[in-house]
Length: 184
Image (cartoon, rainbow, N blue to C red; front, side, top):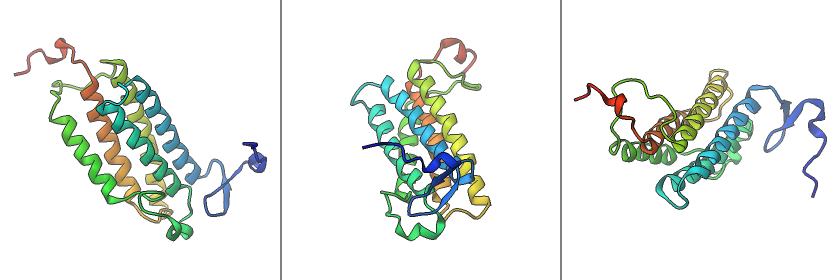
């Protein structure tokens, strides 16, 4: 099986369920940023304890980002063909992230000032993934403002995901004592 089709040699890319757009158009920018975030999460997962809590949650989120990517790679005119949880983001996915945030944050003590990434390799990788998700969120928000989303829940999902990755990164951190000086 050849992985190249040559169809994109003209600077366009195909959308799921049909249609072609410029590779630099808003939709490919959005799902490309989601793909980049999933890859950054792969770097984080590679540093996590295999089978551990963070590893499992990261893997689930990577799968959910493929769901978001499928939704974003589909023009709004074909949105009725998307399947919730398979190719369309759901409210349950957002709720699960909120549960993750609460579960991780109840076990961390934040420093009294901005968090500087790099407490551990895993936390640093999670922070890189968080910033990639924020970029994807900006790209998807642009689609929303242009009226080019069939459902805005994908924006909510990405917003919540960046918070969840912050919580996971803080959980994976090893706090440095000097960051807590003067805190009571």
